[in-house]
Image 1: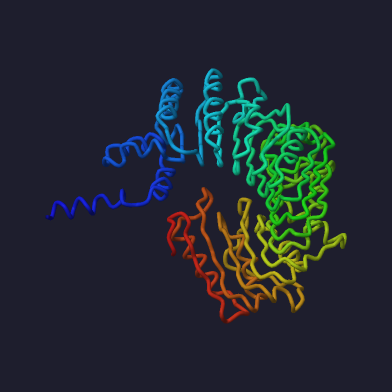
Image 2: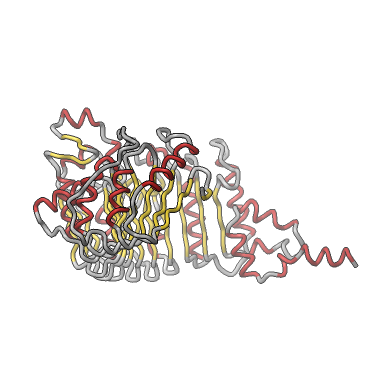
Length: 482
C-alpha cells in the first residue's frame, strides 16, 4: 500500500495535461527531452509528438568543433522520429563555427518546420565572420529563399544570418521579427515591411549597412534599431534614417551612424530609448589624425552624430518614458543653451546614463522635465571625486524644481562622485517617497562592506525635504538586500 501511494506521488508529473508537459519540455534541450523516455510508459513516445523543438547545441553538450557530424546526426534522427501534429516552435542555436557543408542540413530543418506550419522560428547560426567583424561574408549562412513564403509564421528570429530576397515576402501573419546579422540592406528591409502587414514588433541589429534606411509601417508598435559596429566609412558617409510609424508606441535607436534622422508621425510614442553605441570600436588616435575630436564618446567638429541626436531628441519631447544613453546629456545641454524646444512637459520617467562628476550639469538639465516622477541614474565613467566628507553644493534652482518626483533609482559602480548630486536631489524633491541605491560590481569600487557603510552614513547625514522618503540599499554583487 505504501509503495502504491509512493508511485502515485512520484508520477504526478505524468498526470499533467500534454499541453503543460510540452511547455516544460520546451525549456529543455532536445537531448534531455529524448531522455524522458525512461520515466514511464506514457513518456516513451511523448517526446516524438511535442510541438516545441529546441536544438541548442551548447545546452545539448554538442559544442566541440569536431562534432558537426554528431550534431547533424542527432537533429536529423530526432526529426525522423517526430510524428506530431504540427510544430509550433522550432529553435536551432549553434554556438560554434559550423562547416559550410552543414548549411544544406539547416535548410532541410527549416523546410521541415515550414511543412509542419511552424509559428515561432528561431535560427542562430554562429559565424566567425559575424562575431569577429572581419568583413568576410562567403561562409555566413544565407537564409533560404523559400522561407520568405511561410504563411504560418508569427514570430521569427534570425541571428548571424545573411538575408537576400529575390522575390516577394509573404509573411502575412508575422507579428514579431528580430534580425541580428552582419549584412542587412535597406532594400531587404523595404521588402520585408511590404510583406508583413501585421508586424507589430521589429528588432534590427546590424553591422554592414552603409546606406540610408527607411522604416515605414502602419502596424508597428515596437521598433528597435541598433547599428552596433561603427566603421570609419560610417563617419564620412551621408546617410539618412527615416521612420514613419503612426502607431508606434516604443522606440529604441542606438548606434546612430546617420547624418540625418527624421521621425515622421510618431505621436503615439509613449517610450523612447536613445543613445550612442559602437564608438568604442573606433580607434581614438586614428580618428584624431582624420580631424575628428572625441569628447566622452561624442564627436565634435564633424559632429554629425551630435546633430542626429539633437534631431531625435527634439522629436520625442511628447513621450512619457525616456531613456537617454551616454552622450545624450551633452545634447540636452546644447538644446537648453540654444533654447531650442528645451522643455519636455510630458516626461514622467527619465533614465540617464551619465557621468556623476558633472552633477551640476545634470541638475540644471533636470529643470526641463517639470512633470518628472521617476528618475533613474547610472554612472558611466571612472570616478575622480576626492572629497568624501565635504558635500556642499548650492544650486540656483526654482522652487518648483523636482516637485513631482516620487522615486529615484541610482546604480553605483565606483567612487564617490554621485554624492553631491544625491544631496541636491534629496534637498529639492519635496514629495520623494523612495530612493533605491544599487551597488554594482566594479574593479574600481571599494570593498562591499566599506562602500555600503560609507554610502549609508553619508546619505543619513544629508538633509531631506521629504519626511516620507525611504532609502533602500541593494548589493547587486551578492544579489541580496543590505
